[in-house]
Length: 256
Image 1 (cartoon, rainbow, N blue to C red):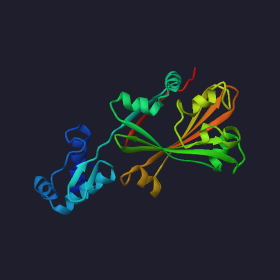
Image 2 (image 1 turned 180 degrees about the vertical axis):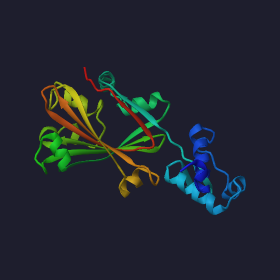
Image 3 (image 1 turned 90 degrees about the vertical axis):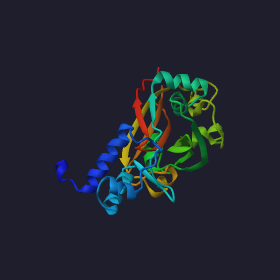
Image 4 (image 1 turned 120 degrees about the horizontal axis):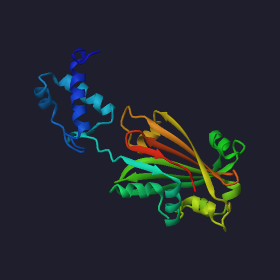
């Protein structure tokens, strides 16, 4: 279909999309009213409404009751993971997420939602080398940037190894669990030498949509990250759910 064959609402949506992506319409900026846009494009309010609905489904616009339609703020965080910064940030006690967000002038926050001992889900058990249903400690967290939810992260740890340690406590762990894993006095006493990540793209569940404020039509990336030690032991699985409209990831994971 050529541009001239597009229905009017698609042409309006394409023009507004181009203005948003170019920065002409800035994040947080209020759009003109439906009546004004109708006059601008010499069309009907129904056509304008269909164009705006399409852009809302794309995650580019949001409606605020009684205030109007706005360009959706999108505090994208570019995440760079390398073996070098893994070591450096572990030693300083600053997580990679917090360090990357702060370096980009953003305000990061992590909240611990819960810490429980549960039966291992099948995909987690297989990665940890456990029998399905074996006990694992799960630490559930939510990550925010500038008060906007960015990702949900559940960390799974074999209860046979980590029961009675900081991992089982409802509090932050300085340097993260990786520091505890590599601590010569800790429960594992081994260096982490490899991360393996499995990536799945799917639509979010209703609970994920609510927790992460995901607009209609925006998919979610699920990243399962498995940590292996120098002797091949699997000690951690991180299950991260990330809206696809607010992150850029680059991984270089050779851990020295």
